[in-house]
Image (cartoon, rainbow, N blue to C red; front, side, top):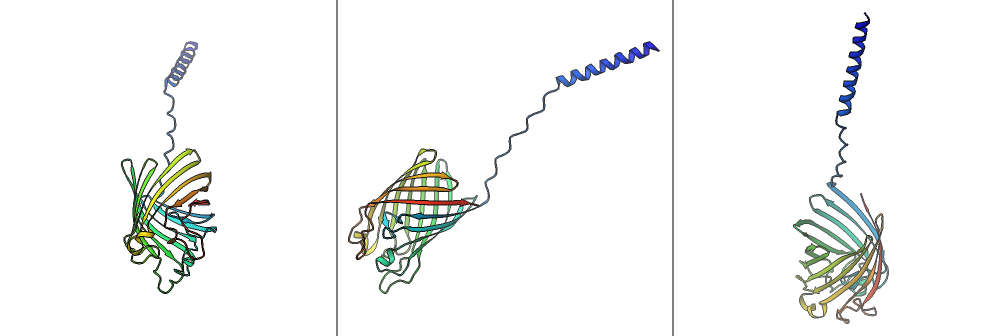
Length: 264
């Protein structure tokens, strides 16, 4: 009876030791895999609002050197298509006696993609202005198609008018070609260098065509808030681009723009 008990006890100890050895030799459980990155949303909506010391476009002051309020909304699809609208207060139409309009509304749509190291952007842009056109003046509403290519920090863009251009009579097929370099200075600071040429077709081709430039710094505060500031100027014909009793719209001008953007 004692021998049986001892045998059972020894057998139990050996079994326990074997189980313990098997557990010690078993491989450690694999670490949990890292979470997959969040997929790019199929649809993205964003909105922005800003205040500018003055509204300057292609080197020409659009708000008679007065502050301008601006806002926009944008939609983009993961496949590359996008569309949006943007609005700004203006004064140049009244100053030049073209219309009673005091706001510019830009409507645009396009497609962005890439080919190797080159990012490209093609699209359509309509500049639409509020107010009625004065008798004898040319409707300032303008339609453009554009194509842009970006390599590293440099973007080249060509815009072609398929309508009259900004109130210039018989100016269809006018164009704007420009180059912009967005140079990172530090994590939250970018230096933008820009030069462009506005070619006007038709009767105003001589005095209406000009070159513009811009040097701009942009500070990103984070959370959608940015502050841009710099200087812009042109070699535009002074008599042609000076409204009666107003300032020359193409003079070299410092400016600032505070902007807030939010993506949904």
